[in-house]
Every structure is written in C-alpha cells, then in structure tokens.
Image (cartoon, rainbow, N blue to C red):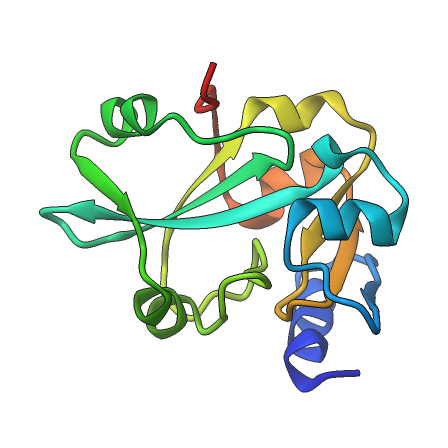
Length: 157
C-alpha cells in the first residue's frame, strides 16, 4: 500500500475503526471518478474541500456530498468571516495532503470541519484516504465522529 494511504489505514485503526482503505490503479481524484471506481451514486462520495478564513487564515475542511457545491455565503455566515478556496500550497502545508486525496482524518494541523447535512441520507459513504487513488467506505455517523465535524446546510441551491 502507498505509505500515505497506509498512514490513513493506521489512523483508522488507532481511532478504533475497522474500515479498510482501498487503492485503485485509476485515479479517484474527482467525485465522478470515485463513484465510478466504487460503483455508487455520486452523492455518496465525500468531497474534501479546504477553505481558508480571512483575516484569521485558519483552515476549514468541508466534507460535502459529491453531488453538491458549497455556498460560500452560507459558509461565511456560519464561520463569521470571509473565506476563499485554499490554494494547493496552503492545502499541502496545512493538511499534509494534496488536493484530490484529502482525508477527513489524520490532518497535520487542526481544522474546523463542517459536514454537509446531505451526507446523512446515505447508508454508506466513500471518503479519500490520502492519495488521489485511495478511498475508504464509512457510515455517515462514523464520519461525523471521526472527523469531529459540525453538521451544517452549506450546499448551493
């Protein structure tokens, strides 16, 4: 297993979860690619998006359904400051992972984590496992607990 994906597998075990990281030859970088690989509907894919707050410069991890887009106004109203999508350097330096493989756990620094309420409608979800071609299956309530997220309606209408 790729060392980065193994790090997420190890973190799951340390946290008491038995979820298994799966690696693919083909990328799972986008929600569409991931849904095709694991044979699920796109809404079951957990998109991990990093935003940065201003002026605080803090990292905000959004876990949203693969079929949704984030409403920046809703996010800013909830966070209480302006936000922008983080650039690849900030994502790498603050999370320890690259865009396209950001997991909901095992981040290098502490993030505020917000989970899209639409993810709760599915029996199982698929989240990134640290690389652009690794994922793990997870129940919505487990994702909520393991990521220490706050549930919010942040989808664009």
